[in-house]
Length: 282
Image 1 (cartoon, rainbow, N blue to C red):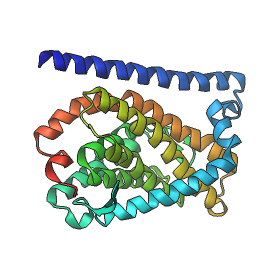
Image 2 (cartoon, helix red, strand yellow; image 1 turned 90 degrees about the vertical axis):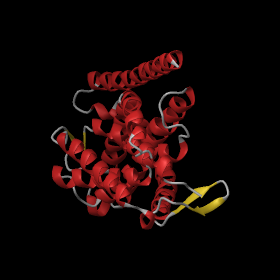
Image 3 (cartoon, rainbow, N blue to C red; image 1 turned 45 degrees about the vertical axis):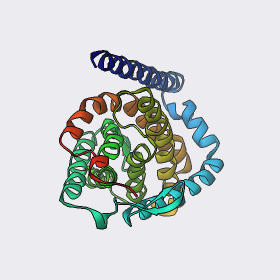
């Protein structure tokens, strides 16, 4: 047992080091862009060039992601879920929630919203986005608490928008976008313990890379579509906000989430709050 625990610690440490390396590469790329063009580093930032340079393709991909993401949100609220057998009933819809589910959703929303609001003064794009280390909690809430945790992340982001003065048309995209940050690892990471190679590997795929891209494109597609109302130039949407969301989620989720998850999972499971111990998806 001690050897297994030791191996798990080594695995988590190794994964965190990889996450730190990935985060460092992103930060270094932005530092290079800032050095080359202090007045407008985004024009030289490689991620900005990718998102903005391929904005037409991103718009098409974003439309697909927006439709599927919104559909998944509605379906899960209704107590249904997509499986390999198709659309089936689940025990996780709001109609099936008990007192514990409501409490976990409220707890997730309060903690997530409060920590997001705490960093709201560190503004990147006024009225739209800011530095968000608290995003590292969203995948953990989804993986540990299930759909209540995913809904809590969505509500928490809305609370932060309101408290931080960022509330507007774009908040709708942020609401479901943050739901997806929690939902993707909840749905596709099979082992939520952060203590096995499978758990770490699947988390970095779904909880870091894929969710970062999906949430960035989902939110920015909505900002693009509502351009007439929001009034943001396309370069700001795809050249600044999209790479900012993507970079923030890559960095904080790659570095912080595995550490927090490894620490919190035994506590959550030991108190009977882990969603798989409470709900049986049929």
